[in-house]
Length: 177
Length: 446
Image (cartoon, rainbow over all chains, first blue to last red):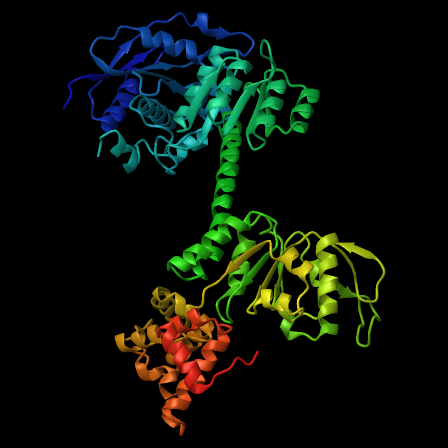
């Protein structure tokens, strides 16, 4: 088995336990060892005052340019509201068959929707988004299987419906079966 | 799951193109990008895209103008107009010009997914519809017309050739050879296939009724005409009309038919309003129309008006190779309709069928098979299940010479005393046949 790592880079204030739990979920699905490290980006460069959101495309490019040594894939973790020009918001983004993805928990928080804070739920949602974006970097496209992690999610409720793992077909595609 | 739907993104902003590209790639679509209208139109010349997503505001040609040009190249293309600035005027204009939809950036991710999914569904449904349509046509063309002999392949090729035109067709052939099936095949492969094929058996109706049948009648035109009634020519508007046994129509009807063919107008019986109908005419006969021309029983001008294309269907005895296929076809047809297991035919029975003359052609064969299945042992078709084993020979008191004489006269009459053809069917040489004619002092009855 390849000894390369998947790297999770934290670009915000995250609890260590929270990050480790995310890492555990990712490792469970992709079987690669997962490392965590802190990162720094001047996010003000990517802020769009008109939309009051941060440009996901630009951030993805910057994370991709970070020299991360011998890793197979990396995912930047954020707390800010991400968007791309064509969409009102995104949960995350990745380069298809590339090496980098980004994910934000901003719109995964219950408080965003006027509901009671739920850290456990937030952890589950964020894990799924990270695993989903990594799936794109491994070459998976959106899947129609109802509970596959690669199913496209527009709203948080969609994320709650799916599991953390790719379906059998998706696993086959990337050699995880 | 990868899709075979292709999308072209046309937008001058790279970030928009990249975002849409990544979004659609993640959904499994095939995606290409163009940075302006000119580039997009150039790409469309060499490649077909199912969906075009175009920004309105672009340097040079704008999205609306590009959309109009795309529609003039391909009316079926799905164009979705995007803009950052919502404007009712441009939205209405885009939709009036035939745009599939109009969306404002930034889009709700769900809205974009739904929009593309619906467009993709429409494309898939159209393609499926086309496939199904062609299947219906090919069923009409292949399933019911059974035969792979050279003679039948020639007939089917002629059907294929003539179907696309509007030319009148006369189908000739002995009774029971399938003339109506050929007429149906011509119609169902023609551009008129979505309109009716109206059939009229001219030989089955007396002249007065035939006139009313073909042209319709007004209420009160004759005793019993309680209502206005459309005629067959009127019903065939846009489609085809099939006149079977055309040789049986009276001289008066021939004149009327000629006028209708020339002018495509007619008046209902008892009426005075001229009616126009656009139809294609297909006729059939088992008689020799040329002979009827020469003895004055069929109008020459009508003959040449109808006989633009002639398809002659050979009798079954001239395509022995097809008998096996036809037998299998009818066995399957009747076993299924009688909810029975499909049974075979034994070698002796098949051999007998292949040697038989079939004066009634395919219809006679079909009747034999149906009868054999009904009265047989439900395991196989045997020689004794076939009717002609108990023919005249079994119960006759006539001599061999009498039987031979009768049979020779029958064959000679059938082929209008064409010695070569008759000799071929009788499987003797011409000299032998001439000797038989002399021996029995046979004379033509016509």
